[in-house]
Image 1 (cartoon, rainbow, N blue to C red):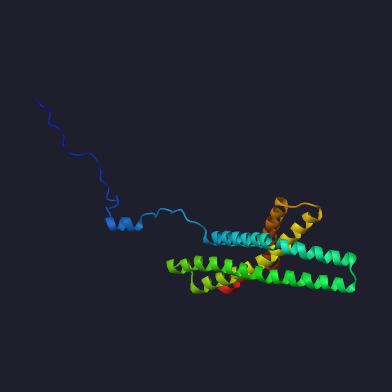
Image 2: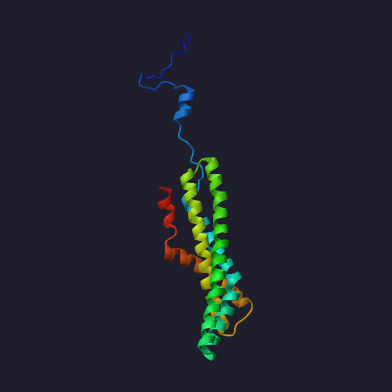
Amino acid sequence: MVNQVNTSSNVNYSNSEPALRPLNEIMQNRPKARAASYNQDSLKGSLSGLSELGVGALSGYKYSGNFVGASQKLVNSIKTGGISEVGAGFHEFGTTVGHDAYNAAGVGAILGGGLSAVSNTLGLLNGSKTLQQAGANVVTDSIQGAVSGVGGLALGGGSALLLTSFGLTGTSVVIASVVGGAIGASLANKMLGTEGLRSRLSH
């Protein structure tokens, strides 16, 4: 006699098993994949810092020759001239450096503010920045550019003057003016605390 095959399932389906959920509910509640993202504040700070260094280096390179020339004339007038010659030396030094500092500040403000305007306009268009934040960034970056230009002129010109006083010329002096200009820009902005303007203007 052939035994009957037991076709009944022995699997016990418990009532506690969760029911199948609709597909749209599953899709809504699923964990969202983490997309690679950049910290916008860090990126903004990096770009601002690079802009400062670039403006300072350019200022040091462009105006160091005038700074060295005016400084040497002033020193020579002090060494060999009388009161009138010394006075003329100070006047020429002040005129030359003052004129170059004015130009360096203007060029720095245009470069820093111009780059910032482009970046923040894109931020406004994609909704990552408010109008107040964008305006604060442009104003701050323009001021930082101006300060970088003057700081680059001062330390870049001073570095070139120092090497020239030791009899060095050519490439070494150019490198000193560029590196000194970049350092001078960074130091000037730190001393004046220009970055603090950004948060004060954006709130």
